Image (cartoon, rainbow, N blue to C red):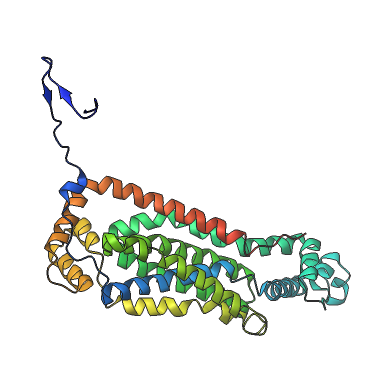
Length: 345
């Protein structure tokens, strides 16, 4: 017996089987080639290496060398007070602010660090800004990622943000030579913009170049690289490795190694075929990109699937991209505050 949902009736009482309704999936042919190729794996590993590791690295980069960097900020502040004091050095030593910034600390334990930050609200504020403004950069990337992806595509946008990351890291590392904690803070903001955008663009890139059957598996690689970056930063930041007074600027720059590898490797890789269709309708370029990714010349069905999806599903895709941008930057902002900032009391 059929239920009322399964039949339709004419006014005279005649039963009629319902007509099948065409869905978006019915319009899109299933591509023949859905396996993992060496080129596809190479590109996905390259992308996640150059974006996931820097994100995880920078989220925890200030944890292990926290005492060293706070003492460096104290030394910069003490030098400024000494140089710009209106009175002589001997008299300035009697001022409370000079004592607050310049008194000798022999104990380098975490307990003493908490006491130092609690006694000096200005120092505590500077350290909090150094730690937390990395998340501000992630939030700022919301306003640039979508526009750059629309105008320049995914590959070029990722390379642009890699260049921004290099500039921000350079500013942070040169802060020691310039004796300027403002440069360290500003560099961290720029780094936040770069890694925030990169970790929005790369999951979209991976989803567009991967066969449907592999998107879930390949989509786990950014998280894997993110965790690997946290492990690397925690290990290298130990005092007897690189988290010391001499090497902490170099330590902050080591996340550029996978970024440079990614930039070099991407020069041999194609743009996402979907982006080539969506921006300029470059059919030949999209076909060449799919042939490279699938290592097969039989890509006509997948090309047709991309064209149909763009004509039918484009508003939904844009909405999904915007949601991914907001969610990714929100998570980046929240993750970067809590691991790297310790309360002052």
